[in-house]
Amino acid sequence: IWTMAGFRDMEIARIREQVGSGHVICGLSGGVDSSVAAVLIHEAIGDQLTCIFVDPGILRAGEAEEVVKTFRGRFNIKLVHRDASDLFLSALEGVTDPEIKRKTIGRLFVEVFEEQAAKLGGADFLAQGTLYPDVIESVSFTGGPSVTIKSHHNVGGLPDRMKMQLVEPLRELFKDEVRELGRELGIPEAIVGRHPFPGPGLAIRIPGAVDRDKLALLRRVDTIFLEEIRGAGLYDAIWQAFAVLLPVRTVGVMGDGRTYDYACALRAVTSTDGMTADVFPFDIGFLNRVASRIVNEVQGVNRVTYDITSKPPGTIEWE
Ligand code: XMP
Image (cartoon, rainbow, N blue to C red; front, side, top):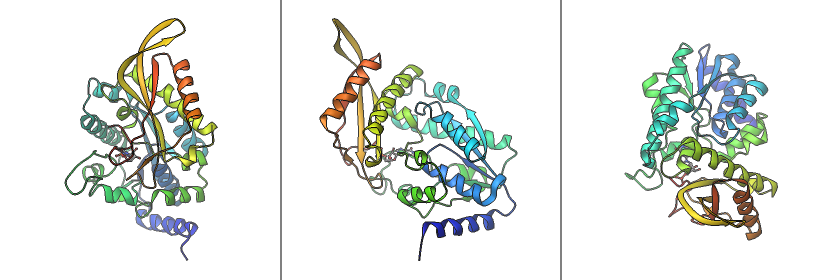
């Protein structure tokens, strides 16, 4: 009979056999997939694994610090931390087209990763947290045979250029199975249960040009939204929840004064695999509380909207 503990032991044996005495590098993003892949591979081969964490400057508040703390501190995994925010943000300067944003970010991740891998003196194997749906989506993503809705950058690219063999221990699993495996490996619930976060990060949650000021505003709005969701015990009932900073300013009133500040949108959906999604039905009292906290606590944002579009026809992310 198939159990997750059995799968773990089988994969550990398989990784040991594939890797032998070779070296593996793994790109760590802080998301569920790469985290589970890294811990599983570390269980199998210990210090023959080095993780590379590229901080693109478009993560949520506190995320980079948490990745470093968890993987170095708690799991004792060899970790290279490269803060590449200057590089990413200057490349994104003035870029408004969503596909160009995605491609720019994807290209930089590859470049910085390669640069760090070269510094380590290379490796024989490249580990990736590719899941079964990634394998499917990279063949045909959402829209049918020849339509690219959005270019995902987590599959392809690296292996061809780097001439390394791939280690992909999650290739046969769906998201919920990866989470179960993560729990089996003792990974904290805060990571295992985390909502998916796309590689292009907050850059695709700021329609129009991205800059440090807008990122700072969005982080504050997003933090409040997620705090309230966790506080209400709703986090695990939601597939993904996040804020979007809109490239529009609107008129508002605060005290006796007029404001002219940015509007934001909140998005929360239920889904089983990200391929289709429905709006999460918050009650209006919850939304009121979040909206009033955002407008009162985040200077520069004076209007909050809730995105109720399902997927299709909307996508989960705005870009
Ligand atoms: P959409 O927005 O197309 O997204 O409905 C479906 C799911 O995929 C996530 N997403 C990405 N994940 N790299 C990723 O790793 C990407 O480039 C990317 N783009 C979207 C999105 O957050 C949602 O969970």
